[in-house]
Length: 114
Length: 114
Image (tube, rainbow over the protein chains, first blue to last red):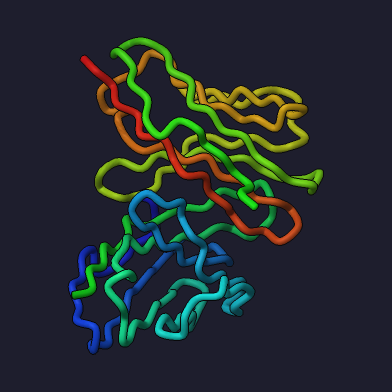
């Protein structure tokens, strides 16, 4: 148990669907992150939230829309996705964003876009 | 530019032997942290060990140790007495004090043979 919980674990959606990924942490962390992990590629940082404020958007297409209602919850809203968006989406949290704080990860949501 | 490089796509080791996983990094920030994570087939990223750029001694955590060579900008992970359960993907990551992003390498798949 890492303290970071992601739901659902698996998701299959059509290109016209709208779905949301949920991430929850009760570690008292202030920073939360979304990463995308595609086959044979390094983890790609998508979004960073610090104290509920988005501090980074790594040129992510607008079909991915993050939401951070409080420091414990992070969502990733998905709409009109493409097959190449199929990947493992990992949520992480850390106490803050300084150099020596490790990030704790959830188990990920494996997304398949058909 | 790639900031974290793991040149070994796959490594094999015999059970109970030691193995070294390579990682080199690139940064101009004098203050940074280096991390190793393990990702089993379940998908979860498990934090293993941390090394700070100002740490004088190599980090150790149980069977894991980090061979930190600052001048060479390398941070290799050494796993002693390999176990079958060590078979997984291993990622090296760096967080610069400036910016705070946690950037990952491409990963190394470790297979431990009985």
